[in-house]
Image 1 (cartoon, each protein chain N blue to C red):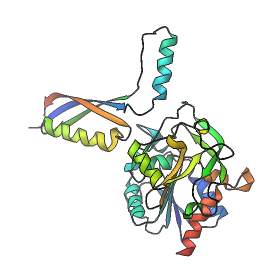
Image 2 (image 1 turned 30 degrees about the vertical axis):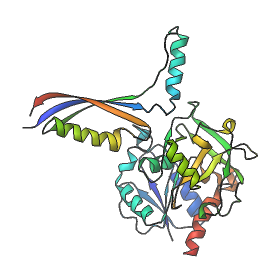
Image 3 (image 1 turned 60 degrees about the vertical axis):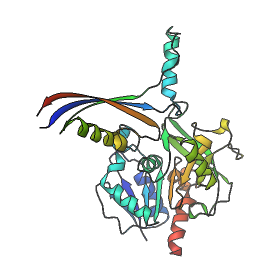
Image 4 (image 1 turned 45 degrees about the vertical axis):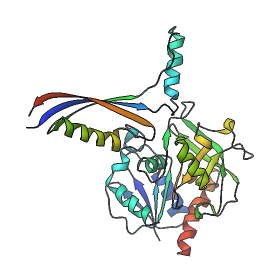
Length: 88
Length: 231
């Protein structure tokens, strides 16, 4: 029986890639007085719901979605968390 | 001989290219809507600048899965010519026809300017009407034009002489202070290994008509046309 899943996908810039937006936010935080901030890197958070036969199939499909579209693995890394919502 | 200009939702330099290829060079040119898949009648494909699919997710990310792109990949694999300008360059890297990626400009600014660009080699049809190491002036207009590639890819690009255009000073020095947007090795445009696919951030189509001030970019389109004449 198939299940519904909720996926939380995190896409982050590889450490070798410059993040000028992160640097700008970092300097903003420091100007606000948060001098304890050491670094800021900005990524993307994507939520999606999907139906799959089981957790393995859901993970396999999510990997494909991330590799093909949601992340550009030349510049980004990704990871995701999966929660089963209900059996369909 | 016929050129095709791919039109995605959000492309906005498509008609500029048509003005150059059809208007100035009198080459039959067809606008190709991104849902089309039959482009066999075309000898050269140009992917224009703009904001395909609103640049959502990443520039060029969603455009790479438009129906027409499978045909563009086929076209490129047959050795036929593909030119991607600005957003077109971003689409070509996303779809894997060119290596690397284009990320946010180092200084965060959207840069709209006319800048010096060095032509690295002229033994390819794209640049045969220029001198090698010639400095030309081309318009740029982009927020995500900072070229990135990992060390191995960058080395391969340089070893194979795949860098066709570099940001430079007006006298041709490609130094860090004349690096427009933080691109690795001042890269403004690259070709694939076979040389039939070119991606570049500057806009040659905006520097082709004397009426708007400069014709430094026209030779790129002229080069494409010459190649067809030979065939």
